[in-house]
Length: 409
Image (cartoon, rainbow, N blue to C red):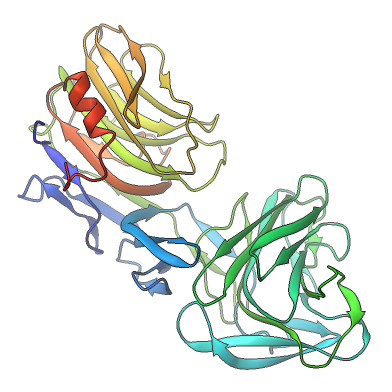
């Protein structure tokens, strides 16, 4: 196998995405984010990093850390809730329940998670925000919860737009409401992040966290001791839950992230080469999310990208047409786009998924970046990016997109 001219393997946090090749630092990506942000660290805990630092994020599977870390790039998002962790504050209204502060270790490893305790009435036992102002667009309501004998229901309006979650088996029991979707993710030590998403039809909503009994009822006679542990509530515009944004007295915005400026004119070959990326999307959000080698414009470029049709594609410009794959973009996929006059091909997960006999070639290539050079940024997870300044054989491309890691290969 030929040696890549440039190779990014996530290994360190800082003001760069650090590339292992070339060794002189020319391949490092300039990273920016104008705020702090959170990540899942190597211990599986939620950790805040400074505004100057990129994020190495770790995957959790069934509540355990798996795989090597990946770089995380996200768009801007605002947690509309002013108090995301302090549920004893009057900002949160209690009905048929009380809240005990700081009684259990939260997903960030601190003793700062609260407990919703149901009273003995036959009623709803819940904590809710009396009113939240939103736009008439898709919004996501999420929180971290752990059972203390009860499951939970998350509700947008107080009756008809909700989902019920089982906090023992980790499944969505039911959903209610036109177009409402629900998601549950398992973390460490019995914690789950539950979320609901829906296009809002009113500008004032009432996000509600309700205890649910074993028969999935949210109105029942409480026993005075059961309930749920809760931490990290988040209400944000968007069609999926982004990384946790802590608040304590005001809404907080996590700034958008960028990573670009890798390589120079000596790094890239206009005539031929291979761009490889192992990436996954944050959501099927129907946006274009590009990784590019370009001349700083969209006229001359090689791309691997998630398209607005939520497919993984590759293309070269100048030229016509892109090559599509049929994979789940929410999973990590290893792809490589080979370009050479009359001999373009796109490989994904060890298979050649398409070819293009385009005879035009780009010129002036001088930068590898997580964007399209016109504001269409890549948002997603990245395990590795490689660039070869000459074409590879089919056997080599099969190997490149099949092996577990660059180090192993």
